[in-house]
Amino acid sequence: MTTCEELVTRRVLLPDGRYLVYYTFEPDDTSVSSQTGPAEKELEAERRDEEN
Amino acid sequence: MSELRWNPLLGEWVATATHRQDRTFLPPDDYCPLCPTKPGGFPTEVPESSYDIAVFENRFPSLRPFPDEPAVVSSDLCPVRPAQGICEVVLYSPNHTSSLAKESVEQIDKLVRVWTHRFQELGELEFVKFVFIFENKGEAIGVTLHHPHGQIYGYPFIPPRLVTELARCAEHQEQSGRCLVCDILVEERQHSERIVAENDSFVAFIPFFARWPYETHIYSRRHFQALTDMSRSEQRDLASMLKTVLAAFDKLFGISFPYMMVIHQRPVDGQNYDYYHFHIEFYPPLRTAKKLKYLAGSETGAGMFINDTLPEVKAAELRAHIEPVSA
Image (cartoon, rainbow over all chains, first blue to last red):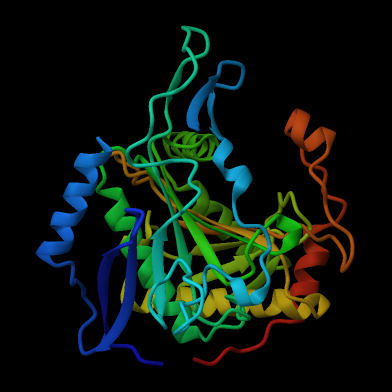
C-alpha cells in the first residue's frame, strides 16, 4: 500500500453552477493541498452573488 | 421546491423536496450519470474521462447552500424555514460495476482521507452544524444509481438520532466520568461472542442491542470524536477494517450485500463534544439471503425494533466469513 501520498483537490464549476471536486493522490506528503485557482474562486463568488 | 417543516409532536424537522421525484431512476449501465464522460459519449455528472475519487453537489438536493424561501406560511406551532444545508455525492471509483467491498484497501484508504477532507471543509461552513457521511447500497435500500457512491449531508441542525446519542453519552459521562462508547466496547470485548473482527485501531461487532440481524458497528479503540482526529495509521486501519467487514458481508450470502452505512461523529457547531466517540454503523436490511427486515408498525409507529435473530448467532455467522485482507 502506498502510505505517503499527498491528497490534492481540484475544484471545478459545472455548467449549472454546482461544484465538483476531483481528488488525486500524489507521492511524497500526507498533507492536503488545494489547487482551487483564483479564477475558480471568482467564478464561485459570482455564482453565489447571482443566487443571492 | 424544498423547505424544512417543524414537527411539534416529535420536535424535529422534516424536509420536503418535491423535485427529487424526478431524479434519475436506475438508468441502463451505458447511461450512468456517475461514470466519467466518455469521448463522444453523453455528458455525465463528471465532465472528465476519468477520475480517482470525485465529489460533487447533488443535482437533486434536499438541502441547498442558497435555498429558496419557503412556499408555505409558517405558524408558531409549525414553523417553516428554508432548507439550507448541503448535499454531496461521493464517487468511490470510476468503475461502474465496482462497490466499496470490491475496492482495494488502498482505494478505501483514499476514500477515508476524502471523507476527512469533506468533514473539515463542510464543517467550516457557518450554516452547517452536522456533517453526515453515509452510503445507501443496493436496490433493497432504494438506491436509484448502482455506480459505487456515497453521500454527505451538511445539516443546518444536529439530527434527532444524534441528539439522542449525544444526550446519552453526556449523561453517562456525567454519572460515571467515562465515555459510554468506550464502556460499550470494553463490555463487548469482555464477552467477545459478538466480536466480528479487530485490528490495532478498530473493533467490529454486532452490538448486544442490535436492531437489525446483521447490524455491525465499528468503534475506534482510542477515544476521539471525528475523522479529523485520526492519525495516519488509524486511517489505514479504518480502511482495512471496512474492507474486512464489507468482504465478509458479500461472502455471507454470496451476493453484493445491501446496507446503509453511517458515520457518527461530533457536530460542527463549535460546542465541546469531548465526551462523544467516533464510530461507524451498518444497517443491512436482509435477515436471510432472500428475506428483508421491514420497518413495520412497531419500528415505525412506536420506535421499538423487533430483531428476529440473536446478535450472538449472527456475529458467529459473519465471523466465519472474515478473512485477512491485503492492500
